[in-house]
Length: 521
Ligand SMILES: [Cu+2]
Image 1 (cartoon, helix red, strand yellow):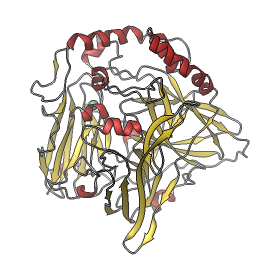
Image 2 (cartoon, helix red, strand yellow):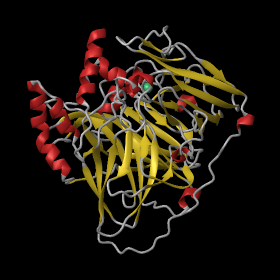
Image 3 (tube, helix red, strand yellow):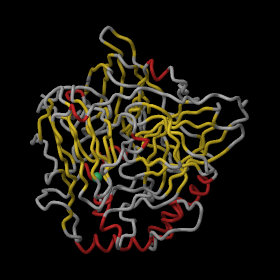
Image 4 (cartoon, protein in one colour):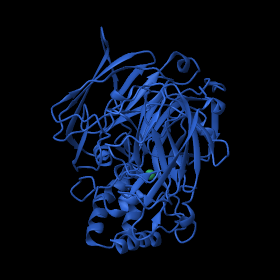
């Protein structure tokens, strides 16, 4: 087993040579990798798709908006988890699962102050949970691993939205099976509006000039099924696909209808980190993070987005202009081990590939002004914090010696312990402000997520947070060897029965035990 992992890793390193081609679809790269008959067959399956994909002939799917039905107790949202098939590759049916459809789910739409009732029905043949990622709600409604919905059962959490306008999301959080269930389709968006965000001059017409983008990567087997083998490599590095889906569409295009278009991007992938940029040399204008808008727009060449993170972009287009959103190789190399033999390929995010083509129609270009000020982002003073809590992300790597601590029961953990549903890792006093210092002692980057709260990033290795991190966040990338400090106030209750989770949002790492539980009392 040890040798197998090492050999596989070395094989990959020799494969992932830099390419001089401007675009090289990952599918073609896979062909270069493939030497067995199976790989060639896979390539043949994909070749027509890859060529078609490069013309971006698929129109971007937009998840339907789900509005709540008014009732005396609040707005009722009906969600049904169901199985079906989806056609991602032409003429090929892929078995998938989703909410109110066969893949992904509708975009739940609510406003700050709304009382919601979410009626979640499970028509799958397996138990699942639904976690409301980014929502500041009591833990008993949070949908963590303790809140299994059995086949045929209905779960009906009810809570008030009490947070900033933002793009949150919902997804399976089933113990040990989150990666697989999200991969098959159990995820959707949760869009929160408020008066403040509606008055700053950003586009707000969903599907017209306010466009959600759920970015995911998948591998397919020859028969069309998703390939999720959970090999040692996939567990350690996280699952990486070679076909990109945006809202379930393969290499799609979107027709820009207005001069200003807002793109709300969710990295809904299991483990891939995207470095998003435009292929026409223009900067990206970033206006929002996970849990709020930023205080003012930020221009950057690229936007690095880890699994579970969101960002809002503003596209200022000219008529008849066409360009692509790309993902570029991750500029942050792996840790100490990565700098030597691994040449930065340790994290496996080294490819360049297109995500989406944006085509501006022949609209009338007028000088729409871009807002220079957005919102006041809530903040907490470090001096008000009562505790700094250190959380060290650890992993054991077979065949490569132990990374981090040595007493892990699974292969991944936090502070030397793998996740156990039976163990509460710590208690946070209700109403207290705490600084959490997240240390990464592994050779891989980890997107760290805390349930039930939104935080501010205080610093990265002592330096100020990235400009794109200036809004509220619930998930933050912590690179190998790095220390990231976040601060927040814990206002919502969590009992031992339904604790809050904190974990790596690389779903393979989460399923392998890089997760813990805390209560707020
Ligand atoms: Cu991780």
